[in-house]
Image (tube, rainbow, N blue to C red; front, side):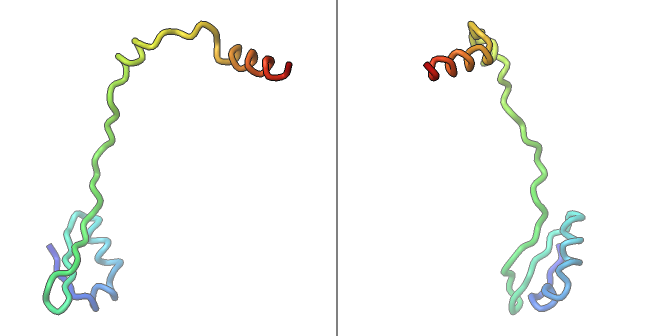
Amino acid sequence: MTTINVRDARESIAKLLDLVQTGEEVIILRRGKPVARLIGPERTGISFPDRSQLRKNIPPMPQSAADLVRSLRDEERY
């Protein structure tokens, strides 16, 4: 964990971001008291729920989507 005062942080933000990118935690101090903490973003993978059971329960369409759109379009014209 690195600590730095506000004035020095303003002058060396790029170096601080490099430290954070490597996994370091940076504490920014104002008048000797911590006011901010720089940490890297959480790197968690997004897990999607298993939808295979839902797909099995959906009944098949009686006609294709293209045929359905054609029939709806033709009904609107006349």
